[in-house]
Image (spheres, rainbow, N blue to C red):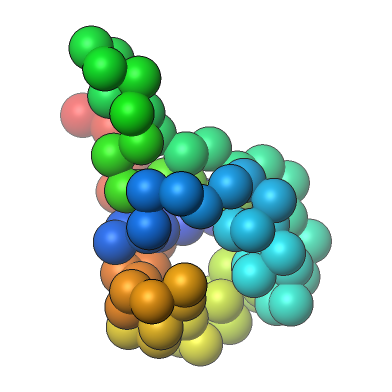
Length: 81
């Protein structure tokens, strides 16, 4: 399983929107959208967990592609330090 970083999301995007987008490439295990701790507002990025082969296809297909009016940044998430 791989974790994918998804950046430059519109603030109004839902987990369902993101899951639907990524499920074209394989099984999506989870979608986590990050919110600001203080305000609770979306920060415009999140993480998607997928099986390895689908994750690689999704990264290749979706990086720098337009989604809901913005070009996504999609790459393999770096481990937390």
